[in-house]
Image 1 (cartoon, rainbow, N blue to C red):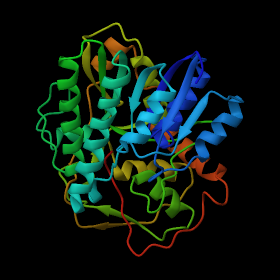
Image 2: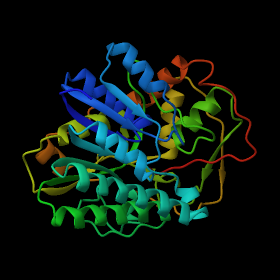
Image 3: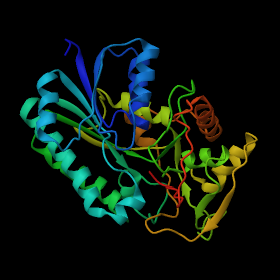
Image 4: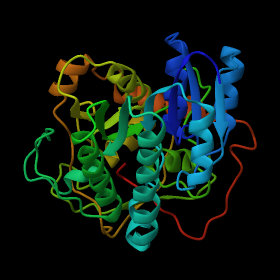
Length: 357
């Protein structure tokens, strides 16, 4: 423990967490960084790279499960200087949440409740940013989505996010020193432009772009696109993709926000919808070939989602800067910069693509 104010990143070794960590250090924020991550869907590699680049010794990593009360008490006992918490930790696969809803409810809800119990016991005066998701909106009747759009998640993953939002809001209502910001992510893709860090999930890729990377590099034979008969211009699902660096910067903008109330929700996206085929065409513009085939629709997928970004722009002074070409360029740049161990060729019997965060 140091005398610095500390920020706790749950799930901080992952794709989004590592980019937030990078932005904190690059912005010269004088913070001690504490990461709790059980490494179910990540490794320590990205954080090690970041520590080497910035030659910093103010990052502590605990490979703990957030549901383990004793271990979380150890973290809060050691770090009584925690002022900010970004809660990223949790399972995030739409498909797996449908297959095993109990695991998703147990992991995502209990981990949040344990975290709140730690805050209540050790330090209630915190700024709390929650990593929520556009999945809470389900199949919207009207686009673009605003923070006041009707909620109706259509899969267990989305329902856990909505339940956590409600738990956090209930806690904030009776704890005035608990400042709550909920960020509803749309679809982060891309990687840091330096090529230092990017998306590198353990096991089978369940997001669209890392799966495309494996197809381009011949580590997987073909991309399955789930449905080409949606009522969209090219028949494939449309999502609001945003660059992961823009998403990371949104968290920094949420620190010490002056606008809004003690409890606020923000949609974080670009305001532009792109289809699965739009993404593929963008990679083809980089002279990269993506083999794909259409298969039947998948349960739990929404047809089209994109957001109105006005509230985040007006109250957080945040807006996405990167366009789709830069998202795809940086994804491929990262993939080429990975080490041989990080690009090892997995052999899978089934191939899955998640089109939604």
